[in-house]
Amino acid sequence: MSNEILIVLYGGRSAEREVSVMSATNVVKSVDYERFEVQTVFISASGDFYKGEKFLTAPSDKLLDNASDLIGREMAPSDLTGLGDVVLPVLHGPQGEDGSIQGFLEVLKMPYAGPGVLSAAATMDKLVSKEIFNSIGLPQVPYVGITDGAYDNAKLEEIAALGFPVFVKPANMGSSVGISKVDGLSDLTAALDEALKFDSRVIIEKGLVTPHEVECAALGNAGDVQVVGPGEVVNSGEFYTYDEKYINDALTIDVPAKLPEATLTQIRDYAKTAYQAVAGTGLSRCDFFVDRATGAIYLNEINAIPGFTAFSMWPMLWENAGLSVTEQISKLVDLAQAKFKEREAHLAQ
Image 1 (cartoon, one colour):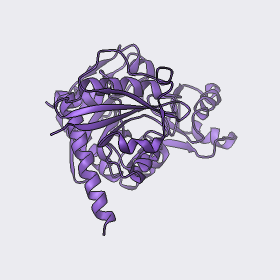
Image 2 (cartoon, helix red, strand yellow; image 1 turned 60 degrees about the vertical axis):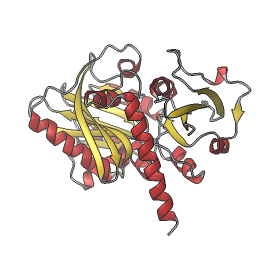
Image 3 (cartoon, rainbow, N blue to C red; image 1 turned 180 degrees about the horizontal axis):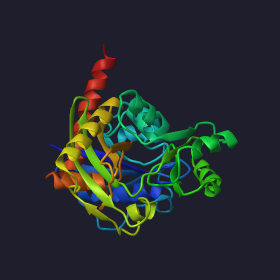
Image 4 (cartoon, rainbow, N blue to C red; image 1 turned 90 degrees about the vertical axis):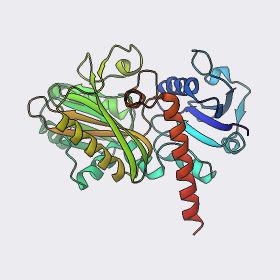
């Protein structure tokens, strides 16, 4: 029997495309090549699709190709249907994990791993997800939102009322892109302007004093969800930066987190509740803060397509739980195929 063909879709139009290349490289190296062949497809910064390399065995350590390496291999996006059996989107940020590529794949009637349209859109927009989590009573730090790409003195006063420090974030961006820590009113407008470069919707959160930053890993569809962790990020700076996540690999990560067992259990319960509330499928990384002084737990956000680099937390947590990266990928494909069959059955009614 011939192997299944797994399409690894990577790159993308967002500012997180470099992370996507690193994640996809790690995925392609870790695939079970006794079960799969891998066809890579790259999406450029301009949104063009390129047919990348095909792998029958694990490649070397070099990063996967980008657009400059794939000149002459442009393809129509709809040509995905003839390239493989199931798609593994390894895309981060807007037009990668915001529901757009998920909707496209559903129109093509292709099985794909990870979140569906609703889950991707709801978790990508931090303001939307916070409203969902508020509605079911999950604890979160106080926050203020900008929804129209602009702010005035009244909005600045509303933000200042949170108390400093605050963290300013684009609502639809990940990997710490566009985030600033603000310690006083004089620096607030610069931070807001930086975040607004990436999104017209911005979230401003009250900062905690050096909280524990802990992350859980969820895996599963619908009611059958497993959550492991959390692990704790012991970062070297004032917050978990892009460079610390993906460039200098200078973080200390405790797996499992060195917190009381009752706290770990509560965090896992919150993570499962949050994942199901946003109709999670496939995987997610659920991020939390734990106040060092009070022990209070706050849900920060859900990442529906978390980083999959060699030192990303989601695969690390599952490896610690006994599931290798190779097994993680195979499980994600199994979940994708099960989700596809269920969706097609519903549509056939």
